[in-house]
Length: 199
Image (tube, rainbow, N blue to C red; front, side, top):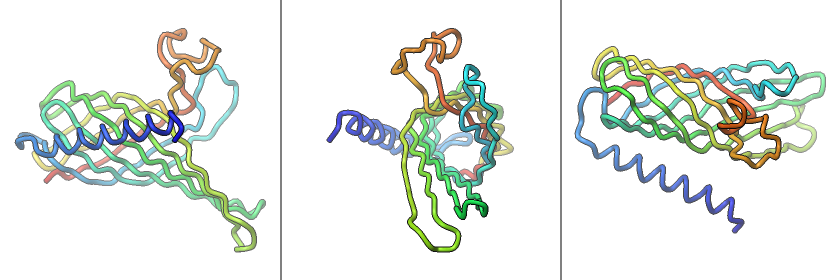
């Protein structure tokens, strides 16, 4: 098995194990297991150094969260489908992301940092059923910052901004990084708005 693939599997197992530990935490304010819907606005390539106009696409999906007082674990799935009749194709994109959350406060208003791996599936199929379907999956890391507002112990509204497909120095062009190359570059970004019911 290629080393990169092995590292991806190990990272996913570690994140899942951490999430299981969080689920065993003693319940407190807005802690424990939660599930809910969300909307995401995705910009495929928001790198400021690439002069290309790209459209922001809206995705619908949901997330599962497990929270303790300071840490959290989130698994999210979003979906966007578009029919292109001119070229007889239907394009469906389904990003799946797992994120570790670091809560910076424990009150009703809680900012947080997030980061983790993601799998971005894209399938193309003919609209009239004639022809072959093509499906690809791309792996990439993401990181960002967000805010959750808790209406009560069992309901929260959260939003975040995250960079996707982080580049940790695999590109020789240092200008692709954020803040003059001090932070990793990226190939996309997304805003998310979600609602979670905690049990």
